[in-house]
Image (cartoon, rainbow, N blue to C red; front, side, top):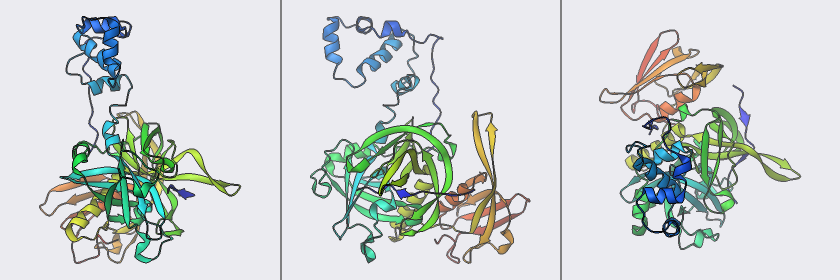
Length: 449
């Protein structure tokens, strides 16, 4: 597969469950009747004037829609087991689904010793007691122009959704300071830790356990998505679009060495991506995380970089979260803050085809993935070179199978190995039927980037 080069990075100046809606009858509610104020108020038993009833409801979020929902239930036209969120989805209204997405979104200002600042976005990925872990891009917290260890920012200021946002980013009274946990330049992923102030604990903790992660391998082209970011450092905002390509390898400048191109796994989206959107979440219509924005296509016109509308890129959630969790685990275990990676071999895609899936009514991409070279630190021998992968099985140190995956896309291989932990065993099965097995232990460099 030929890689595409992305001209510019956007640096600034759990699986979704299936929800079944239980409806009673074909005509499940009557819009003509329910939408009339007097009909709704009367149905709900409101005895005063219609005008007084409307006045009492005018400041309530989703007031009219929520009353439609209540009225439909009271009239027996909607099953009481149907939740308000399910009702909104049936009305093609995604606003309630995005509530967790917005609460999990942050604007970020990174300060450097030189006095420079980098502006971007982030997503609260996990909350443990009063500590929130934030996923963002490595290029939001890192500047290659800085010297030595100062390439990583010295201070990180975050703003929760709805907080007063000051364009004097580094001196705002509403900014919450975070600390750098670690990062992986090759994947453009970094993690910050935020000690949540007491007055914001309930808001942030409400995200913990609720921000769902979609299996990004199941995202399809044409699917509606929302991107939350900090465009041009102007504060958090939401834009919408669709997925253009669910996963592809493109050529980008390496974050820690801009003159050096390297391959990056990306999801292509047509939602507007501007400087400052970097690190922001891409969410599906259920509010589930499907990616982390990290790049946009630009072209130079009369010496100025002009963003190409509808041509943005995001790191698929499976890859982004795997790398982030590896960073967090290593930080907790040894303070390294690095993303370990079981780099057992170099792979390539030798063939690719579209295949219609009658179950999902979508077109799936099927790739042939070949091992081209085995690294010197790999526990596997040279005998696997030139073979096509068919399946990977990972077993933990207690003998439990944690991964059993038929390999149909090249990127699945790297993502599986970012999730390896000490004590795991890995079994590779090839298209010719042969199988090899190796353990992830301290006797090899397996797991070292």
